Amino acid sequence: MDLVIPLALILLGLGSWLLARQRLHIGGARPVPRLLSGFIALFGVVCALYASAELVFAVADAGIAVLLDPPLMFFAFAFVILGGWCAIAGVMNLTRSGRQNVP
Image (cartoon, rainbow, N blue to C red):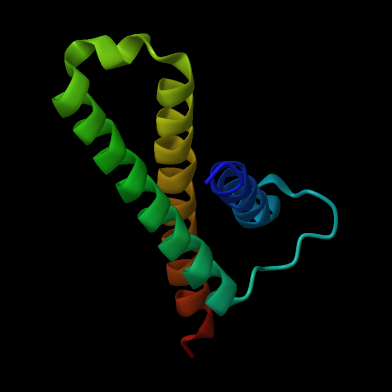
């Protein structure tokens, strides 16, 4: 479990970077393939939902004192923010590429 959290955060960060490249005009930014956008969006949704559920269950178990646990708060909010960003950006990328393919 010690490797899962950093690996998931690294994957979310890479996915976020891939989806933001075209918008930020970084380098030779080619569009991200639709399948990859879908996987990034799905992974973002799963990570954000998992982190939200963990945060809710932690508050339910320990009460408001869980807010004093910095690692839990950092990882929970990092997962929620990065996961939400990847989900939204992936879906927007899918819709944008879908509109460009319509004749």
